[in-house]
Length: 118
Image (cartoon, rainbow, N blue to C red):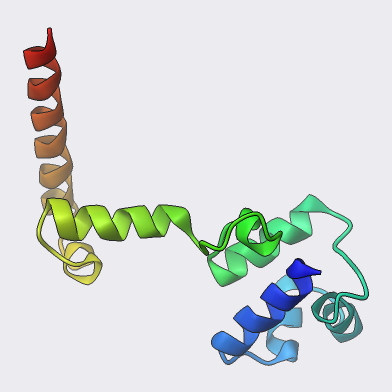
């Protein structure tokens, strides 16, 4: 199944051991091995969410509903670079006041655009 392949692929990409993942998710090594080999599917949505949070991907990605690991992240990256002319790393280096100023300005421009439509 897709879930097992994806969680194993993500673990390998992160260069994490099975022991590390088991510790983080509080599951047994045997259970993780069975999930990764698709012998078992997770019985709870909570466990799927836990895997998604650990690997910073969407549950839809883990379940094979999309091939985009984190659609929100992808949108944020595109918006940062295209709309404000800086990479995600540059944006994250700003202090909270600077980030708020950018958000406030974006809202201001959006409101101006909406007023012109009226």
